[in-house]
Amino acid sequence: MESPIERIRLSQTAKEQLLKLKRNTKIEQWNILCRWAFCRSLTEVTPPSPVPIPQDSNVEMTWRVFGGDMADILLLALKQRCHNDGYPTDKETLATQFRLHLHRGIGYLAGDTNIKKIEDLIALAIAQRKDIN
Image (cartoon, rainbow, N blue to C red; front, side, top):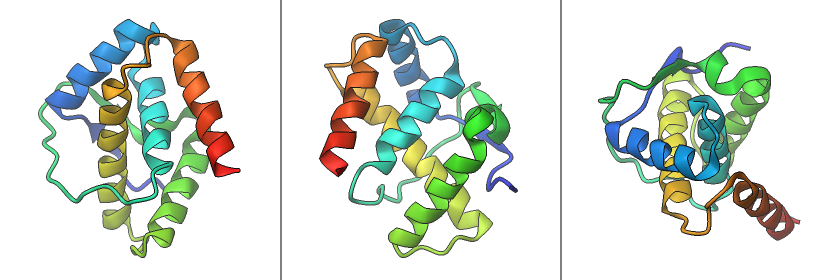
């Protein structure tokens, strides 16, 4: 499946937030933390605010590195979310919405004072799943 964005570059703010999450969770890979963040944002009812996001950090990865084995599933989730929010699913819109969701999710995870270790991420995911069901 063709990805909406070839390379992902994070903002400096997101990089700093991810460094905090790395320290707390002991998850060393940027891409794994970014997957958690992206999925965290997708669970929100409202779409992310359309704010400009600078690409001013040195943290960069390809879509395949971001998604890993789940890249196609994450792309389908993004397309479904765009559809649900009333957005088109063209490449430009998908890329924009992906960046907005990713950065919002990073902010949410970094700002959650309950996340002190990897088990807290898992507990958050389980709690949100129960809320959905």
